[in-house]
Image (cartoon, rainbow, N blue to C red):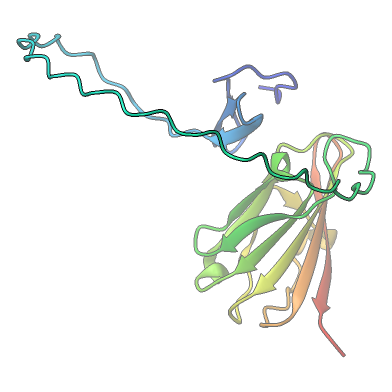
Length: 193
């Protein structure tokens, strides 16, 4: 099923990997569906007897009106944002451990993740990108481990890059989606002189 561009509240979308997301209109975002299986509704129980009404308490006195505070100063006008579907802010994708990570473009096209203990067994993938978009992912390391690989991303010469995997060093992965395939490129080993 194609990714819905004008979703309705409660609408579900299943990725090619079988992950189910549900659209929440009040938050204007897709969330991971709980896929709760609901059984049959049981018979309605008997309504209990009504209890005795309690005594109504006396009304308390009305409080005095408070003093109106002084008006605050006007805030600083913010910078003009980039035009487009997503603002160019970096989303904290949390940690990358044994379960790996899904970098969903609905969280933004710039994401940061920290590799933690067990990350060497995890794989990552990207999802929900539109044709022509690029996503940038910055990897930080709390341990000296590297991800095992990725799923659904094509790499130069068919080889997953040899990521740094050192604490204090950062790697940057850029993924481009052409509408059919995801293409990955790595810039590795960012550190201070």
